[in-house]
Length: 72
Picture 1 (cartoon, rainbow, N blue to C red):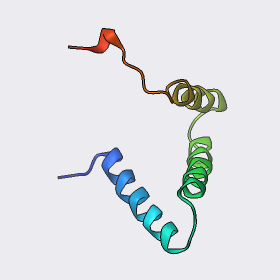
Picture 2: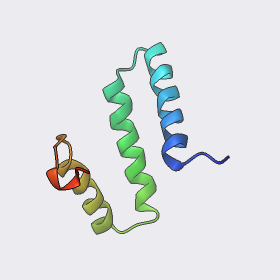
Picture 3: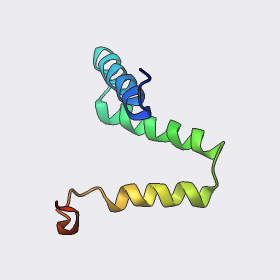
Picture 4: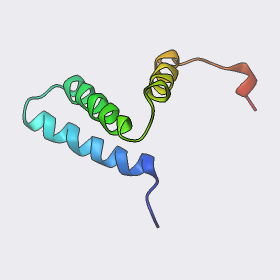
């Protein structure tokens, strides 16, 4: 069975965090570097406005919210 994109990336992020811990690199430094690399990859395939929209969506949804309309 093929891993989903989330499963694939999640495994690699977990490994990066372990490698970073062994090298005394804080997890927030690893995360910031991942964001930078993700944007670099996106710039090769998507427009700046599209990337900006995606990042704004993530920023706008940083806080966990209880959306009543999404309840079963």
